[in-house]
Amino acid sequence: MVLLTDGQANVGIVDPGKLLGLARDGACRKVTTTCIGFGEGFNEDLLTPMAQAGGGNYWYVESDDQMAGIFEGEIEGLVALAAQNVEVEARLTHPRVAGVSFLQSYPVKQTEGGWKVQLHDLYATSPKALGLLFHVDDVRDLGKVALGEVRIEADVVIEEGIEHRTMIMPVMANLDGEDRVEPVVEQTFLRFQAARAREEAVRRADEGDFDGAAASLRDAVVGLAACAAAPGMAEEMDDLEQEAQQLQERRYEASDRKYHSARAMANRELKADYVQRVSRRQPGQP
Image (cartoon, rainbow, N blue to C red; front, side, top):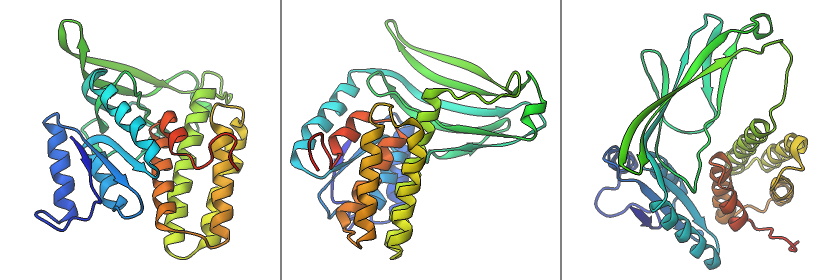
């Protein structure tokens, strides 16, 4: 289901909690909900969690020329379904592991063996990233040992139909205690940090703390500098800096709030095409 709305619930069911429940129940019945908001008037505080609960996408359309690409992506997804009912569970197997942090806003459910998130449907044209941090005491002293495991279950689409599959990946401690940076992981985590910085900037700007909002964005720029050469990273850094300057000048409107929310979502879900499409700073523009 693709919902085009201003998100102002004023007819029928108006309680946000009940609307989220409808989207969540629909996802359990294999009906995803995608929400598209136009212009400055829609309620992103309702549409964003509705899309998350419904296992769909959240899109912000700031200009008309962005619309075609968004619909194109949604339609491509319908014919590129790779798996349904995707669930990821993190389990701890070593006594020195204190817990796990999930770096995105997926709902987390505690299980007998750990913690589980539902990723709903997976499309070949739109991979999903899930950031996990295992908190371990004295990890350098452990040597080669399993700390836990990540268990993935899904109904996978194959040529003959649907097949339920389970994959288990062990999480190991460092083999020699030395830190080694995996570029793809590092870049992904930095994008998550940029997403959090935008959300923090929105929170502070809503409270009138524009200097704090600008500082949050500039802190993210400093972090991203470690991967400045990665695709799209220079644009992200430039956008954060210019948006920080705008906040420092006390220029903050409803469209800015929606822009940051949309960019944060895109970075968390690694939607590189959408980041480029929604960007206010296309190549060659100031």
